[in-house]
Image (cartoon, rainbow, N blue to C red):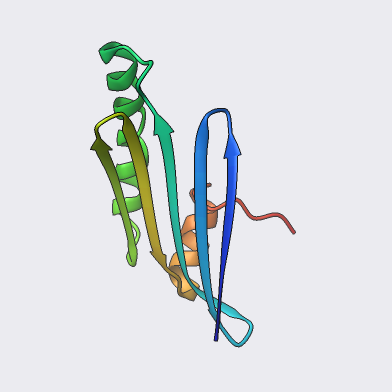
Length: 102
């Protein structure tokens, strides 16, 4: 059993991803993407929130996946939890919600 955490930053977004595996099989992915919105107008913040609606709907259709947006002070955080299994893994890949290259 192993857990690995990856952190990166891109275009002002801080991303933290935790991956849990048993043997050689990943069974859980937790990702948080946070953006500092302190310099954004209300219109810009609303545009970001509206752009997440389609993702929220897509993730909601897949069993074992939770998707949430939290707004705290000057930070907007997207939280994705995926309890992986063979069925939802294929759904995530087919929906382009989990980028996989061979």
